Length: 169
Figure 1 (cartoon, helix red, strand yellow):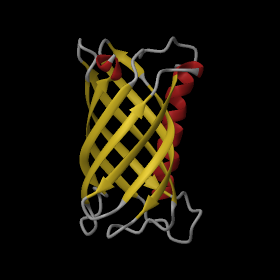
Figure 2 (cartoon, rainbow, N blue to C red):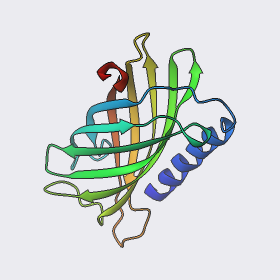
Figure 3 (spheres, rainbow, N blue to C red):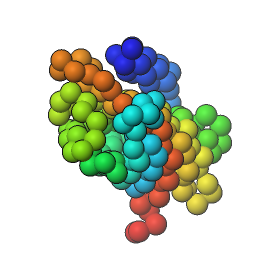
């Protein structure tokens, strides 16, 4: 089931990226994104609080946004990741952002996801305020896509707040 969810999220992300591949990039700012929410939201036995910090770069090839970040849970799990996002401006100020990243995961005292290498796919819906700050909600899936014998996966539900780095210049 987790593999199907990962494949579905990846396919949905690819569909949105392909549909907007020739569009002009919608975002000009680099962002620092803070997130807070629940890790492993669908498993009542191992869910925990999640906190994250992410850098989102300026658009490059076909509007893709490079991203890198760190996330941790309150039970000792943490991971770092690098990947790509795409901002699709659905309507003025409302953005749909599919993402995909490769991560290095350590379970600490948290959920064992089967190995160090994990893949994170997700979607975010956010609103950009006139000052370019953004507030959103994100749903992400973290799993190893079956490269290890154990692959339980985890879904995260997060509130995100993105700060444009231009305010520091």
